[in-house]
Length: 261
Ligand SMILES: [Fe+2]
Ligand SMILES: [Fe+2]
Image (cartoon, rainbow, N blue to C red; front, side):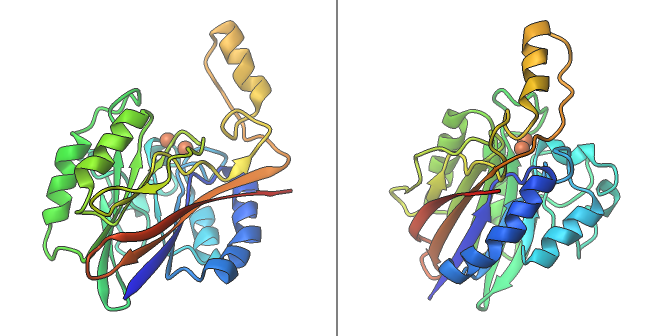
């Protein structure tokens, strides 16, 4: 038996949410995924996700969401992160913060664990080692049949090495955070599906989804970067992965890139 997962990278603001609303039904018809996951850390104006937008995305048919450094920017959602019914995971390697570092779901009678970790290289995150926390989470009882990791990190080397460390113990490792898709989608030697970064779903004529004039001003002046979400045509970044439920090995992984007005 196999299970299939459609995974969207960072959804940026209203344009990103609208693009998911437009494309999810089409991708569902094309790929028939068993589960749909997404990274929601930028879903509300690029800064975290509020409860209304979380609910909007869930109604579109997303089963669970991972996050990252920006999740803490929406005070609206933080008090809800501990609630079992809220299907949002925050990076597991933060300590003494609200929320869940992983979620267990049941699909086709199998236990699937969705894990979120944040990188330490060039992120400024003062967190425990994602490598050591991954070891701990994988051993949490009852252990899962299939593990899926969103590694929210900046450096491709850290992402690749985390995936190599997880290889054979995890069905899928997706990278998020940079908003730029990478061309290294592959199945690693021991069977873990991997991509360094899925890329974002958000405005294309932008700096990572943000208004490029505002970002350029910051680079030219050195003044603090205060950004708003850009507008115009959007790009969509996702991966589709099939995982064998007995071996936990990825059978195939494909990067998906689409555009939408
Ligand atoms: Fe992001
Ligand atoms: Fe991020």
